[in-house]
Image (tube, rainbow, N blue to C red):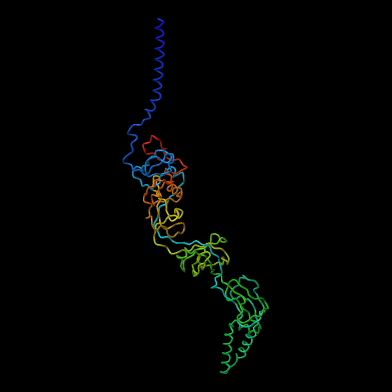
Length: 446
């Protein structure tokens, strides 16, 4: 009995040890068998094109062959998008497109009116300037206009001069007024001709006939005394200027046209102008001449512009904002200038394809005016391009290699690796980006 009891105890202990051993074996062996994937899950899809291989630990580094990366990781293939989508297309979640506030515009084909927008300075119209001068030696007895910029009317007295030569010639003419003989009439005609040669008009002759010793000089036109060269009591030589009167019905505006824009401006081009001193009022005129000289410092060409000034509201020295209508160009696709991305020798725009897909397009640009740029090559018209937020997409296209594939015809990246992010979704936003794992089927996106 005693032996039988001992035997049973030993047998029980042995059975317990066997059960514990079986449990331990099942614990360590069972998980490994569970994680072993079926044979069909590790097979790479034969119908999908491999774009490149990448290291899951460094997805921004691309390789053109499979194998082990420099980090010692097995490289994972990146397949072309299903459906045959072009490799230079950038995809962004439409929700993120709306959140980023991207704007688009349709490319239209139309002539670009090369309107030039430049500042200018109002100046006297020198074609309306009249100089009042002493046509003979004289003394300035009285000066009625004492200060420049005095407004005068036509016929208004300006000054009185004492001219002995005029007085003597006039006295000789008056002495022959009653001559009846042929010789007397000839002498009277010769005296009158001398008065005309001295520059005496009929009004001056009448004033001398009334017995006055001085001659009154009157304003020949209405305007502003822009220049006063003398003082009262001054001796005047023959031809000496006394003052200058400028008319105000028209004024000049001097404008500096950038050399790149001066080619489309011709004489007679219509002008509209505004000045800050007269808000809401628009003045009209035209280009009188484009002066044949380009500033070596500013690379601008001066344009002389004539503006109508019916109310005499414009004054010399005012700053004017000018819009000069240039010659319209031939019809070309037109895009907003803000949509054009200039990067080194290349210029491109971002075309919106819909459904969150965008494509960089190389273009050749022409003239720009009024916020629009003519496209000489790259667009046909009717495309929808991005006008706001395009730089974010362009940056993403550069990181994802879309620009390189666009420019190099989908050339492969060298095995040494080029630093460009493989994700074709925007960084820093909520993206549909599954992370690579060791159990993936090869369709992981970095």
